[in-house]
Length: 253
Image 1: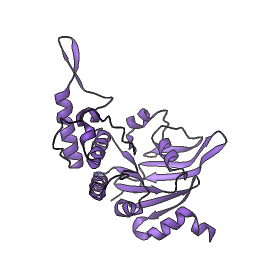
Image 2 (image 1 turned 60 degrees about the horizontal axis):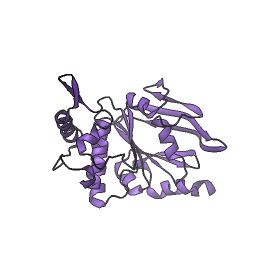
Image 3 (image 1 turned 90 degrees about the vertical axis):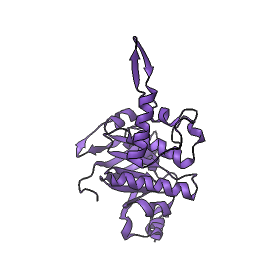
Image 4 (image 1 turned 135 degrees about the horizontal axis):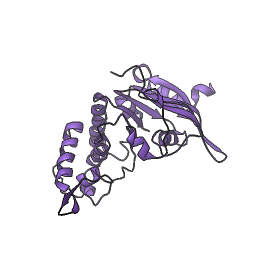
């Protein structure tokens, strides 16, 4: 069950790139223990909104609050420090590294011996196994293989585990998490998202698959031409209604 007070809220978000207005007065709120899906055609403004939420872009105007307190971010690192992270469609996985090295990429654990510092591969491996198992219910057959040899769903699990490894994570954004996955891998990834919701995270999912959206989301936010055109409780709407909002059929009618 989601709490009444939103963990993260965006109000009046506008973003211009020179003479191009990518977002026009967009609101968003995400609650703990829920999945909010954001849908819309290409160019609707979904990615720009999410990049503002995760500190990649600064809004031209508007406000972001975390637990009701205004926040300002100058980088994605700032967002991570505040408990906001993202798993993008590209996953940002280093294919030649093993899963543990990917989980700790950029924040490797080290140990000292005779005045020299070394990578603490044993601790990173043990912590990676723990996070994958305890947070996601995933056990990889081997932790000693290059990540490129894993299946699409396993690679997705590694990318998610890298985000949820941080104990203070509050908000996780997932950009097209099932893109290019087969039916079985898609089902596994959707199950992972449900697990994260049950653990109390606010999960925001961008997806073009309405089937996936209706399976995992609690609310659906529809964007069109840089504006928020509506938010619907998933159980109280239909894919036909959402599709109509995406293409502007209701507006034209």
